Length: 317
Image (cartoon, rainbow, N blue to C red):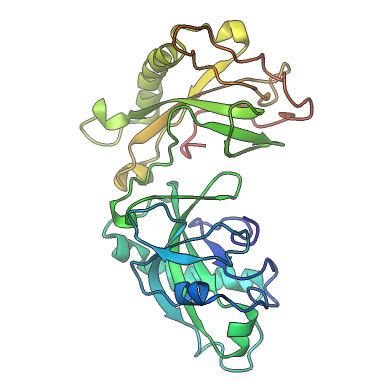
């Protein structure tokens, strides 16, 4: 999704998305190609509109009902014409990111009607004009919310953002890629991966009296994730396969935003303990049969070299 997702996330997980082309430096806006009628309509959508696309440059962007899977929900419209009148040069990427923080971040919690989890699955972004739109004087931006995976790819969500679970969790059975030293986006478990998600647990099922200390979360999850992993693998011996069990924890800010779900996940360390090793195949036991996960590193010999050592994380990835 290089034509849609640009750059590193800022403090509030801000990024800049755009239609038409894959110019990541600003300069030419979102590209010079003329938008289709559906994409042009999508770019001019009002708040509470959900958009999706399949093409890398979002050239097929169109509106969908928010109950359906989508990649972007418009939260507000920002007019930057006072700051950028006709003839003004197209902002650079760094400047676009500053604009998105100034114009989009402030109103998102009002739109949601609740706190935005700074470590959650939803992040603030904007749709900026294409080069042609900018040249024609278009200065309206669509601010919105989207879910960007740990590898940078946009992940579909369903339902209005105000009704969505913000906890950054994956469904059991999901495998996350291992790309160099970074945990990546969901991938087929038959391919080399960093983690396989074995459970999704709710901290509130245990901690009902307010935010639990990290040590208390760790102690409870140590037991509960072990139970979940045993259920997932039908009692499989993770240590015998050189696999380790780890889990997420939640920060106070996430808890205050209503994010109480966490993942339990299984991965493998490199022999020297310096990071994660690639695992190939699922550890889930098929009904009536043994697990079939090859030992760590049995896949691509170049995968899994030097990823950070697995630790409990507040980010769910």
